[in-house]
Each structure stands twice: as structure tokens, then as C-alpha cells.
Length: 126
Image (cartoon, rainbow, N blue to C red; front, side, top):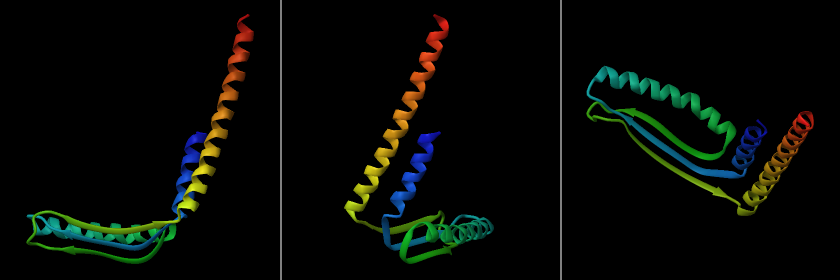
């Protein structure tokens, strides 16, 4: 359980060190059935409308251009995603070192606990 907590913390530390100066997403919903296209378009638009505030709150995004369109002449869904990500290598390296230290501490703690449990069970059997 400690490792999962450390991994989630690591993701949080890394995401704060990334900058997304440009995020562009264009989604075109198509299909054979016009009613199905309309329903899919509505679901996609609602999903992106719900997802965008989460992305904006958790990532450092400067400029966005996200669109969802319906095209009744197309036969499938098409998506174009253009993302620019920048990061300072020293900040990432520092975060990676902190994460490695946290994993090492958790590993040594778990190893020590297992040795104590193993030693206690061996003493009972003798």
C-alpha cells in the first residue's frame, strides 16, 4: 500500500513540473446513423466539458483550443490532438531523486518489517 501512495504522490510531483503551452484537440463525430451521431456528439461534448476543468486545475496549461463537431457525411470518429509539453530537466531530475528516495525508504521499511515477522515466527517454532 505504501508503494501505491508513493506512486500517486510521484505523479503529482511530476505533473507540477510540466508546462503545456499549447493544447489543441479537434474531434469530429461521424457515423452511418444520424441519430447515433447526434447522441455520440452530445456525449463527447459533455465529457470534454466535464474533463476540461479537471485538466485545467491539475495541469499548467497556457493555451487551449478544444472542439467537438458533428459531420453527418463522415463514417467514423476522427480526432486530432496536438500537445506541446515543456519541462525544466533539473526540476524533473530533482523530483525523480525525491521519488527514488521515498521508494527506497518504503522498501527498507517493508524489508525490516518482514525480517521482524520472520524472526518472530522462527523463534516460536524452536
